[in-house]
Image (cartoon, rainbow, N blue to C red; front, side, top):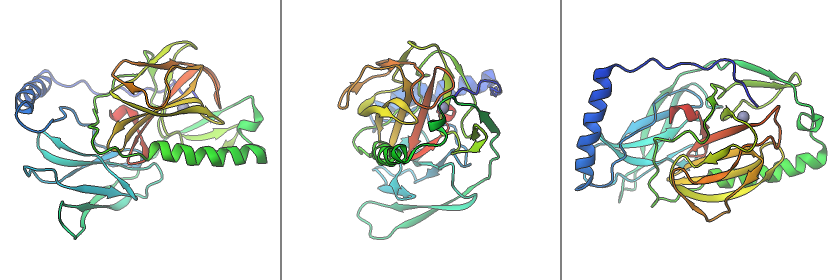
Length: 291
Ligand code: ZN
């Protein structure tokens, strides 16, 4: 569902700050050859519904154990400043104090990791769709939707611990990236779930490229999402690509940054051709712009 009217521009970073980042990155590349693999990039932190929290797990020599939020394991990674848990905050999270639980290795006790989530008022979006069933599904459609929800949950909820996610995600298609994440949506004047991804306007047939290494875990034709591809990047980081006109991968395929996944289309509930791009962390769909 394109919402291309209100792109927000990020303030330009100062030259000096940019230089400091480069220097740090170079230092980390040198360190990475002797220490555990270090991601050089973390998502932008935003402790709001639909954002991510980065929680400190100390700077021990060895991996700090597991962290669970909302019943799902979060990524745990070595940042330049030490170990961190990256927590995806669902769009329906309550503002206020939230708690993740941290289990250090060999320890019976669960430690509480508390953080505050600040409310965010996302804008409203009103869309007209021609296919009435996409707004008022039949009972048969509802059965199909319920089955698909289980399958989507399974695809978004995987956790291959051995696969190290990369967080500097490339844009999967060239095109205008909208700030459409989180919009409170009305289809034909009826309130529906908030928009849980980023829409990128591009013509039907535009190639969609994987933004990072991963493995394709599921593909299919879904009632709302149309032709869809799920890519698992490791440790609870999963991306999804919706409304495709053609799927070019199958479950089990290993993909790299830039591997073609399929073509932009207008399948499912859409008002025109575009890519809907979803990014999930510990099963929570969060704002792809943070990555
Ligand atoms: Zn969308």
